[in-house]
Each structure stands twice: as C-alpha cells, then as structure tokens.
Length: 232
Image 1 (cartoon, rainbow, N blue to C red):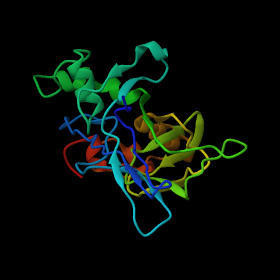
Image 2: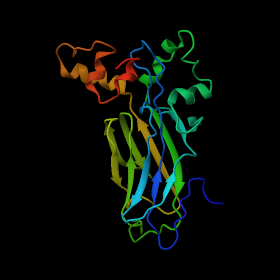
Image 3: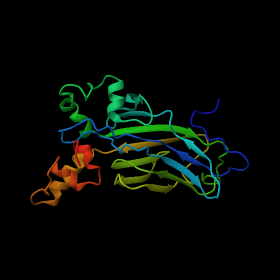
Image 4: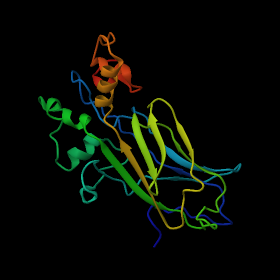
C-alpha cells in the first residue's frame, strides 16, 4: 500500500509541489506574558515542494504528524490531535494540560511557551531514483514554507536545510539533492521564542525597550505581539 503522504509521480517525474498546511496560533491568554508557543497566526501556513516547470502538482502533508518536547526521547512522540494544529491543542488532547480557557488555567500552562517542541512527519515520493552519489533525479525541487514560528530548525532526512527567526516571511529551500527514494522524514524543531527574546534583551544591555503591553522582550523578536497577550 502507498504511504499516506505518498506523492505519485508518473510520466518521468512531472513537476509537483508538496504542501504542509499549518495553523498553530491559538491565542489563549489575555494577560499572560506569552499566550502560545507555536504560534503561526490565524492563517493556514503551507510548506510545499515545487519543481522547475510551468506545471506542478500539489500534495498536502496533512497526515502522520507527531510531536514531543524536544529534549525527550524519540519514544515520547505523540500523534497530533488535528492538522493544522497548535501545541496547546495537542497537549490538551492528550490530557497533559488543563483547558487554558477555563478559570485561571492560563497561568498553569505558561511552561508550554518556555519549552522547545519538535514536530515531524514522513512522506514518500514515488518515481524518485538516485543518481550516483545519492542525488535525486527530480528536476529542481523546492520546499517552501509560508510561515514558521519563529525560531525553527527544519531538518529533512537528517540534514538541516533551514533555520528561521522571523514568523512574518516565507522561506524557500532547494531540496533537490536531499530528497531520497522511499521514505523522507521532515522535522520541525521550534525554539522557545519567549526565552530567546529574554536572552536577546539581556544581551542588548541598557534598560528594556518601551512596551506598553506585554513582556518587553517581545520587541526583540520577529513574532506576532498578540502571542504575548490579547492586544497588539
């Protein structure tokens, strides 16, 4: 049986794009210093592969996603509750946190934004053959992310292909030589933007920048301010 994320390529490897729809902003907080950890706005965020041609196919990477706290063992991976997803929804689904919208629970889940989290999935690309040296026979193939929050390391088949620090822009990576026959593993390693912002603020020296709402460290990172509270 084909893999659930298999891309059927026929006719000599026609062009295609591989999409990964991610919506992971879930602004639970109204007064907390940071609301959500993996927060990629309210819009669907896609990553996709595009080959060099006037035509292409599109395949969403919407299945097979699992997650864990980055420092934990690989045996700690749990299935995502849905996709697009949010770290709070996934933790809530597995009864690992209380509902952040009830009572004062939002103060009890602040630790989520101070942890690093890893998401991963696997997909196959049928019709891919390796040249000598292991390079793919596909045409130029790019992995495109419409948005990643905020500090993210993207690993494809064990190779780091991208590091990000800005959730407002899209990223495009040539992965032609990284794709392999059979299963390909995609991993997204999200850093704790709140802690990184605090570190950058300390390294900058001097008094914190003026901030009328939310934690002042948010001004050090390219992350949507509503992640730190209800208002911009």
